[in-house]
Image (tube, rainbow, N blue to C red; front, side, top):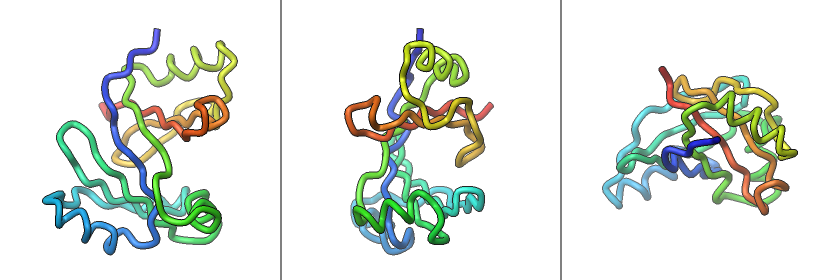
Length: 135
């Protein structure tokens, strides 16, 4: 059985991480780590809040999924991420139940964590990221 530990983060598609982070500083939320994910054409900035985070997603090129999202929908909520105990087991269990997955197996994500995305068609329109804490 899949065990969800917490809401890991909410991913926000933005045109510019630095500009977007300026607003969150007004709320007392400072930027944690920032990193580039060249394989996803992304710059990612994490803003820690309690046990969860806001993840700012800035495209670094026109070919990535976030760039296409921004072009089609503009800035806003991109995905919801849930932290699970056993990501590989969760992916297998969901696939066995006939759930449509974007990732058929876990892959590296931001902050050294493993991730797998569930297709929005399976989640009533929400792009869902499953995350396992880094060892």
